[in-house]
Length: 624
Image (tube, rainbow, N blue to C red; front, side):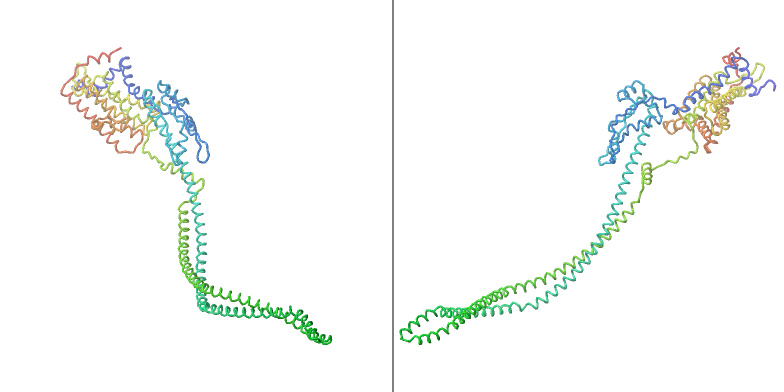
C-alpha cells in the first residue's frame, strides 16, 4: 500500500521532473524563472539613478536682467550670475535663448521647461537694503505634457535657486546692518565722550554759578551798606547847594561893586588930562605966576602914577571878582545838579542792592539746575557707554560669520538610521515584492495546481494539492534567487544584509506561491483571475512608493491586512539595515498567510478526493 501512496513531496518533484524532461518544458521553466528578474531588473535598471541623467534634459534660461548698482557703488548682474551658476551646476542641459524661443520651445517639446529672469531682477534684489524694498521674481514656464516629473524637479531647482539667492541677499543685508551697528557703536562712544565733556563743562559751570552766587551775595551786602551810608547824602547835598547859591549871589554882588569901583577909577584916569588942562586954565585965570602954576601942576602931576596904579588895581580886582563870581556860580550850579542827582544815586544803589539779591537767588537756582544737568550728563554718559557695550565689536570676519548664521540660521544635521543610496534603491523593496508576486502568478500558468498520481497509485486529494504547490515553490525560490543576483550585482542595488534579504525573499516567494496556489486550487481559472485582482489591490495599498498613510482612508485596512505590505516593509529593513523589531512581525504575518493558504489547500484537497489528470498542462509538460 505504501508503494502505491506517494507523498506530497514525491508528487511535487515528479511534476517538476515532468516539466524538465522535454526541451520545451525546460525552456518554459527557465522563462518562468526569469519573469521576475526581467520585470523588476529592467525597471530598477532604468530607474536606478534617474537624477544622474538630468544633465541631458534640455531646459531654456532667459536672462533679461539689466543689472543694478548697490548702495556702496558696486555693479551687479544677478541674473547672469544665476544663469552661470545653473550652467556650472549641470543639473540640466541649460540653453540661453530669448523669451520667445523659450516659450515656443516649451510648447513644442524642444525644452522641458524654461526659467525667465526679468529685467528688474537685480534692481529688486538691491532694493532690499533700501527704504522701498521690492520682491525679486523668477518665472518658470512648464508644460506637463513634456514631462510631469521634470516639471516637478525644475520647480525644486527653482526653489533651491530662490533659497540660495535669498541667503545671499540676507547675508548682504545683515552685513550692511552690522556695519551700521558698528557705526552706531562708534557714534554711541563718541556721544559718551561728548557727554563726559559736557559733564565736565557743566561741573565747571556749576562751580562758576556757586562763585557767582557768593559774589552776588557779597555785592548785595556791600550795596546795602553803601545805601545805608548815603541815605543822608541828598539832604546834605541840598544844603550844600543852597549855601553855594548864597555864596554865588554874594560874589555876584561883590563883583558888581568891584565893576563899579573899577569903572569909577577908570573914569578918573580918563578925566585926569582934561582936569589938568582945566586946572592950567583956571590957574592962569586966577593970575598965578608961572612958578606958582608950575608948583601947583607939579603937585597935580604927582597924582598921575597914583591914579594909574589905582586904575590898574581896580581893573584887575574887578576881573578877579568877576571870575570869582563865575566860579561861585558854576559851583552853585554843580551843587544844584549834585543835589538833584544824589537822590537818583541813592535810589540806584538801592535798586542795585535789590538786583544783587536777585542775582544771588538766580545764581543759586542756576547752580541747582546745573547740578541736575551735571548729574543728567553723567547718567547720559553711562547710558551711552552701556548701550555701546551692548553692541559687540566686530571685524570683517566676525561680520561674515554672523551674517552667514543669520541668513542660514538652521543647519540640519541628518542622522539617518537607514538610507537608500539611490532612487532605484528606494523603489527596490516594492518592485522586488511585486515581481515575486508576478512570478508566483505566472508559475501556475504552466504548472498544475494539483499533481495527479499515476493510474495505479492511490493519491489522497490533500497530498495531490500540496504536491502541486511544491514545484511552484521551488521555481519561485529560483526566481527570487536570480532576481537578487541580478539586482545586487548587475543593476548595482545591493542590500546591507544580502543573505538575509535573499532568505526573506525566498520566504516571501514561498508564501505568495501558496496564496496564488490556494486561489487556483479553490476556484480554478476564476481563482487565477482573483489572484491578479489581489495583486492590483496590493499594488496600491502596499505603500511601496509614497507612505501608505497617503492612500485613501478606505484602503487603510487593506494595507494592514494584505501580505505584500509586510513583504515590502521587511525588505526595506533588511536592504537598508534599519534596526527594528518589525522584521519579526513581518515574518510572522507572512508565515501566517502561507500556513493559512496551505491549510485551505489541504482542506479543499481532502474534501475533493483524488484529482483527475489536467488535460491542458500535461501536453505542455510532454512537449518535444
